[in-house]
Length: 262
Image 1 (cartoon, rainbow, N blue to C red):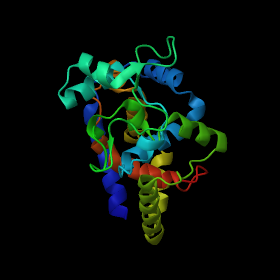
Image 2: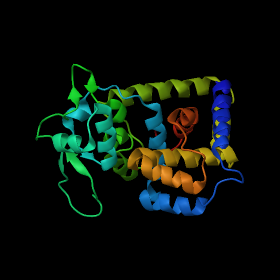
Image 3: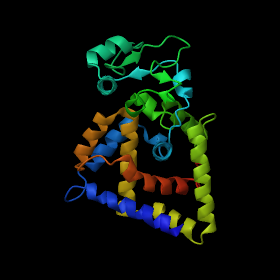
Image 4: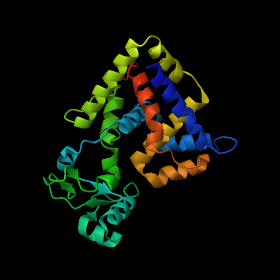
């Protein structure tokens, strides 16, 4: 278990290779912009759920595809899905989308997938085990369930991160985290080492927290916005999910001993 803590710590140090010469730029300004997008009152719930999102693996059960009443898609979503389906963006939008039910700046150019009341998402296929466009699914689908707006509101209201009923991906994740905690408790000094790591202000830990939050914003808002923030920070590129996963495992283990009650 101590080896896993050390490997996770090493993975966080490895993230330093993304830094520009001389360190991060405009960090205070970028963090203020992050605060404007996701209010600080939702921390640490937002970052905790970003970590859970990185650790969970969608089981493609189709529950969200069948039960979600409305599915919004951005122009970026339309472009990405159209390319995946071998369609022009215009053809995709005409065939699969309709105008958004709401108007105004908050909606912008977003549209809705064509979907009658009570019907499943047009891309749901039970024979193919769920979503036909899973690798390029809409941003709102990618953010579900841990980084959905509803889940973040519940976390802030209840002051904890609760389990998600009837979600097989979340159930598997909770069992994995329980096993991780049991291993921590069986290994002398491992829990203390983990708590000391995330209670510190080591540069690699501070960088990991920032990049985890940035990755959460990418999942929640989309790649273009996150890439803009990454450029402002001077990062060589956005971190890949795999690069954050080992650190996310340790962070989730650390949070399981906090009042968040993972």
